[in-house]
Image 1 (cartoon, rainbow, N blue to C red):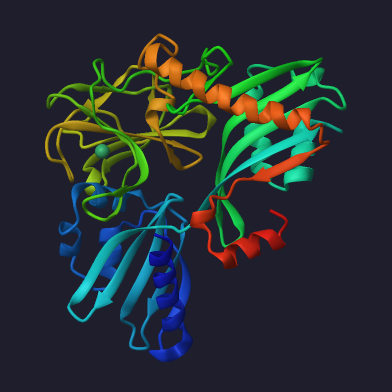
Image 2: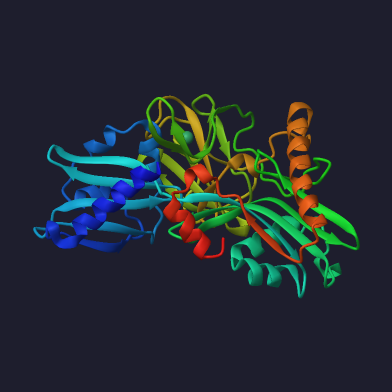
Length: 400
Ligand SMILES: [Zn+2]
């Protein structure tokens, strides 16, 4: 996967070095532009989209307004290739070959590392994390995941905190939001832990859920037919596939419900998603309801939680009636299952067992480092096999 990216990166550099007297420019994806319109602008047949499978054709509808992307144009004005990011994980690669244009979905190359940071608090957690780790987003996420379980005002100087988190790194820079697995504050000699489970939700030490504010269900009865995946390497197709939403199977005409109060910001056709409603909610959440047979609300309308906004259908790239439900936080696609309450119970049975197993592993590591009594400690478990010697040296020089 890494090599593949390097290959395209090299192609880009080669092209740009005036070998073909081509020009690489950094463009901005204009508001309201669709991939179909983009193809038309460059006189490329939109038939190339038809060669994509359903999931990839849907992904093409996910390009954000104002997104920066690369374009390589020959001296005669012909588009040679372009790389358009979708989310933070994937990009559309459109390129010219002797047989015509081709389009594919490529992963954005990054290194995912796990970090463990242990700090003594000097001023306050947020300030100290930024000072030591030099990543404001880690500080923001840490505060966010712990705010329900600890009173930050009660924290004193020399209290301790620990964070285990995954961070994507690209060309030596952190990209995207750090994924906090464990957050802990030791205050008044008591450790307050928060753990992330594989369902994307945060739990306390006993496996009790911490986020209490949930969204409603998009259908009265839900049955998942295809889950959310950011990017997944398909073992048979040998390429990356992603599905930036959850699919729910339902009969044509089943009412679709808004999962929270909000305002309709899109109502109409959207490429592979067919008939779509998009709703903006509080706290920078946006929901998307695709493939509808009939839309019931218009742009600008204020909707309530549970209100019928349309009906299940199979418009756009769809193999049968279903609801594709997308959830976005700060314009990034996130797993809808992490915010929609699907069952009323906490972790049970096998799920609880695996949660407790992971919890024990994490607390063991943290306690071990605590016992070493270091004032502050940042550890990076870069998986050795994934890092080239050159990159390792690069990280080392930066003190990681
Ligand atoms: Zn879907």
